[in-house]
Length: 221
Image 1 (cartoon, rainbow, N blue to C red):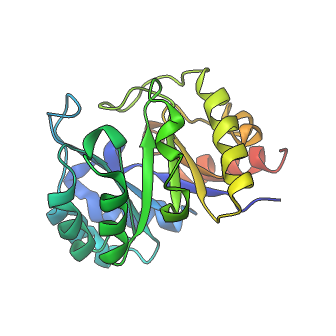
Image 2: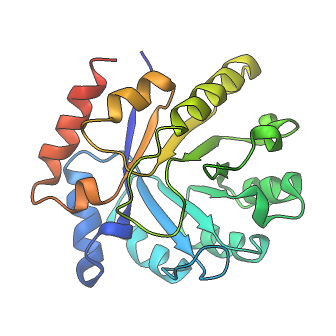
Image 3: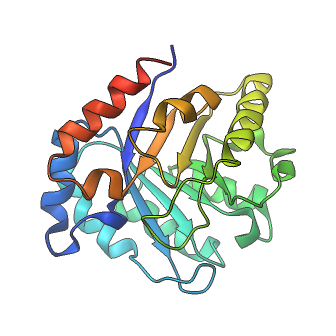
């Protein structure tokens, strides 16, 4: 059975008490903190930067998974690595040289990931599987929290799972967008092992109840 990881997205947390929020969600059973970085350029929203990552780093021991929705991407990678990120992923459309950017992330001591929007083709993976620690499939169009899962993402998740298995590399397969208690098992059956959930967790009064319910669903896969 795969190792499943729940990665709450702080995009849906209460930013007025962010330290408390990340401590509470980790205490409730979160495996990873997912950190959404938007630049109001690559995506139509503006969120948070390295200073916020640095501020929450002392509050949790679990990995911080930074999803860069910015263009260009290379300039800010060292800043997030220095701020305490453990995983940094980016969109292929945001880099002129995928191999170079992936190596930059690794050279700065982080695991490296590529992110695929719903309409982004998978051919970007053809020559970089050996440099990847994570592949993130977006099951919504990036830019805003609280969106509904796009069912067509299941086919892309299954296709990426086959590519990972054929490659022989140890690569996490993460899914972000509209993940909830009632669909997490279906997403896992398609091949995902890491699940980003924002409003489904932070939008509820009891984080542990939600995370436990998600794990119960994953036990059915």
